[in-house]
Image 1 (tube, rainbow, N blue to C red):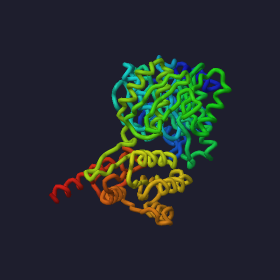
Image 2 (image 1 turned 90 degrees about the horizontal axis):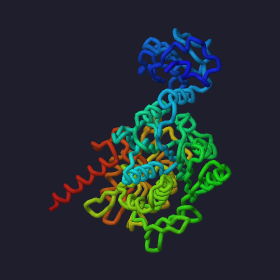
Image 3 (image 1 turned 30 degrees about the vertical axis):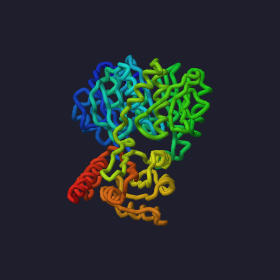
Image 4 (image 1 turned 90 degrees about the vertical axis):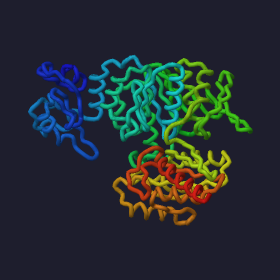
Length: 488
């Protein structure tokens, strides 16, 4: 593509020579520059891309776009100044890789909790109906039936996202959309056919100014809907109701809701714990969801309504949901030889803790043992609520380590002991030993919940030779089985 075509509407005055430069690719990583690429320099949080302009030029960059005034930059190729580099990168990537949004149906899911499970449920429903589906999220990405490792971020950066959309030949694309992605223009230029809101909880306030800013950032997703696009909102929380109220004022958006009552799709739970979904029209469908928890019924209702919006019949949706096997690292259940139960879940907010711990009680747990930690450099304001929720709803809370990032282990240990000042819980810094301790002290009927990491790999070295919570559980189960055999 010619450089002048790429820069149109982005740069006020485009020199005539830009029409003679042919761009072969776009990158914001000087190490990835190939001859003829356009290099976009961004002032990042840890590094400043402008420091690598010369390296990009030496590697063959044909032109550079950056945030600093041209007077500050000395480059041997044309340099173009933009106000916001991240936004420019997204716009350039969209124009280069997807000049006209390809013939795909794109579904974006935002919210604090439930994005991953809802996305997996919807993908499962669509594929059972014979549709092809790409998935972009926090567990892994799937494009054209091929599984790929997920990026560090829930939503990949704008350049990677546009490349992935270009590569995808699938009919449907489902993506988790984080607040960081919305505020950093990672999804800039994408027009969504359906936007889904799950809920909002106290999270990421180390990044956002306050929860109001966090909410308004999440709500930006609905401004990115196509004309006559569909919004699906769960309204059993104040934030969902507020999103719905905002959308009711926008005539071009088709709004539908899910919830326990007064919604287009209502979740019904009988005294006998039988569950069902009921449409506003009166259609009623029993739901036998294989995965546990009222929060997963909420996710199922959102996936159901999204599939209905896409034209699937209620019976084929319900049949698919009744055969949904779950998501790696989301309420994964495993039995101990002595009759206790292990659960691994990604829950990392007070509300998510509540869902998991209440589910264990509802499933008949004799005692609930809860193992969790906090991530260094992350929202510290939510930690007190997490501890209070755990200590209220579990019989024993075990505080342990998660990823430290730049916080030291000593700092984290001090914080854990301070939060456990009442001594209602227990602090075991080594995560693997914390899991082993719970295993050794659990009896038949007890439930042990390990939350915070899901299927993520450990970033710290622990005493047991394992790299994930699941591996640690399997290791301690193996040790327990060996002791049982040794004792005859």
